[in-house]
Length: 155
Image (cartoon, rainbow, N blue to C red):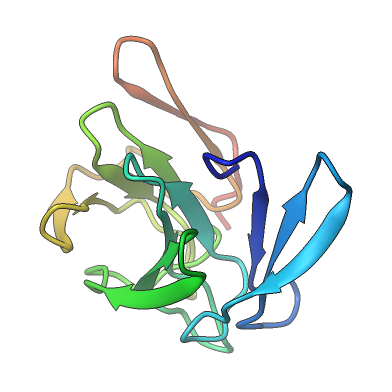
């Protein structure tokens, strides 16, 4: 959900797409907004502290490591730093310090790797791996700042 209350829907699920739309829950109306630079499905999105949206990874027939940022004020997507590992079916969690934690996913095998995105620099840093590989999992940021990763599939 964007700061103005609209919902951004971008990309595909079973089919890789670059299209994006905005849903206004007050009016029930959908409007088309700018298209992403890359087609993708099975990606993750996080609203940054500045109100922009970071979209990470996904697949377009092969795992992606590139990322892009949506500016809701202009409707324009711009590319930003690429992740260290291509992945899809991962989680992307907004941390209290403004960084984004990307964890797990799939690149032909389930992953346990994790990395941090710093919006100030546009750079990715590898961080500690999870104890188990997983895809289709959930991640919740707890009040103590830790991230609880649960469930998923390791096959």
